[in-house]
Structures are given as C-alpha cells and as structure tokens.
Image 1: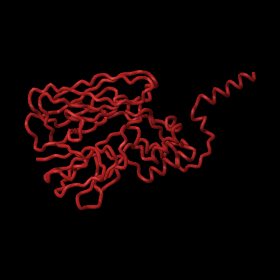
Image 2: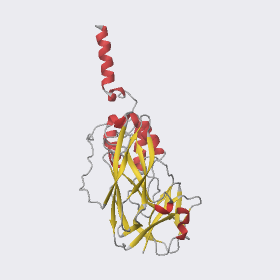
Image 3: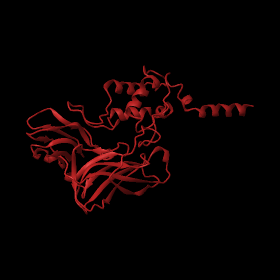
Image 4: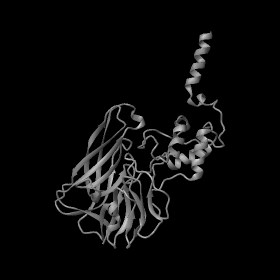
Length: 337
C-alpha cells in the first residue's frame, strides 16, 4: 500500500510541469496570461511558433515558464527581439524593439516567480495565407542536410540564371516549405562583395522589391546566395534536409531607377542624385548626414547569425553626402536615375 502511494505521488509530480513550479515564491505584479502573453504575441511568436524559424516555441505558458530566466537575459542583453538598430527620427521597415514598459514587465515577471495568472489562453497564430505571385524565374536551391549535433550552418550557393538577354532584377524572394530549417539568405550578384549586395531576407518575409528600381544582370552572370540553416526545436538531434527556391522578378526594359550598392565606408561618395534605401552592416555603425550630428541610422550590434538589412520606410536624398563611423563595414544600398 505504501509503495502505491509513493508511486502515485511521483506520477503527480511529473505529470504537469506547471505543478512543479506552483510553489515558487511569487513577487511579480505581472502574470503570463495578462501581461507577458501580449508581449510575446507582439514580438516573439511570429518566429517562436510550431512552423516558425526559431529553434523553440513560446506559444504557451509551459513553453515560456522554463525559459523565464533565459528570456530575461536575452531581452536585457538586447539580443531579442533580434533588432539591433536604435530608434531614430526615420522609420525603418520591420522595426521590432521592446518598449521600456514591456522590458520592465518581462524582467519583473521572470525574476518574480513567473506566475501564470488568469486570462485567455494563446492557441496559436496561423500564418496569413497569401496567393503566391508568379515569378519570372525560379532557381532551385540544392538540398542541404543539417547533421546531428549541428545547431546552424552557413552555406554559399552559386545559381545560374540561364538568361539569354540582359535583364533587370526588380525583386526576389526566398521560398521553402521548411522555414524553420532554411532560415534566411543574403543575395549577391556574381561575387560576395559590398558592391554586389542585393538584400537579405528571412524565408518568412516574402518578396523584397525596390518599386521602380532594378539591378542589371547580364547573361552568364551568376547569383550567390548565402544561406543560414538552423536546427529547429521539432528536429531534436535528428538529421533532416531542406530544399528551397530563389524566386526572381525581372524586367527587360530599363527601370526608372538603377539599384546600386557600395561599401559603407564609401558612403560619403554617393552621387548627389542618389536615394538611400538602407544599410546592411556587418559591424556596429553610425551613419549621419554630412555636417549633421544626429544619427540617420545607428546599429549597436551585427551578429553573424542575424544579418539584417535595415531599410528606410521612405528613400531619402542627401546631396551633401553621408558619413559613416570609423571602421564601418558592410553595404549601403541606393538608387540613381
């Protein structure tokens, strides 16, 4: 009889992770359901969901509670959300940073027992379906298998376009059925240099277009795709491969504006008629208009596993030129007539 009671007690303790933390001392004024859940929904679950590119889920209390300390550490270090540009007077497309209030809530909740509280239960955010646009070219990305024990891998793939005539690339998209494995890619024309940069996209981002601008490509020139593969939470230590496509939109006629890129350290040499689209930094940097002290774009970190193209919501013109901080590395993307 005693053995049965002991066995029953052990089963009860292991059956529910929530029960294991029910006796933590709670000092937080904030609860998961009422305060933390809306923050995670706004900033995290787009990637930290069952079909997302993040390595684990944050779609329930049982997902978030064991990672409370890790969440606190990551937000205090400003590693998450993965957005490393300071807030400025010019809005950037896709800005995703925590407010001071949101940061305080997450830190106090994590430090104060991480209570669940009461309220609506998150049941998942289904990805919005969109009718796929017909691309002019679809280039197959060879399958890559992430070996057991390997958390991430960066691979460069050269892709021949098969073009017979000169053309203009007006948009591109990274497409894959396994967005949690084939996470993101950076595109260059012919060679991986700052001057040949054509943008960076996550596999969940959709099409990157330049609205009236294009990059010239000649027959025989190849495209170089630098792809970051990462191990998703669902995979465990199993081996699994992923295929994908680079989808391109092209034009035969010259567009109104030409897309160009230069080294960030050469940002002071842009043509006067250039319209700045954004920057792709590989080190922290500060970009200002010549003769001004206020930052146009300031990036405080540039981790290799989170390359980001910081794109202005509205292209800007600076006839007097631009000045980048000493040691700036990466690309600056702009258009000219």
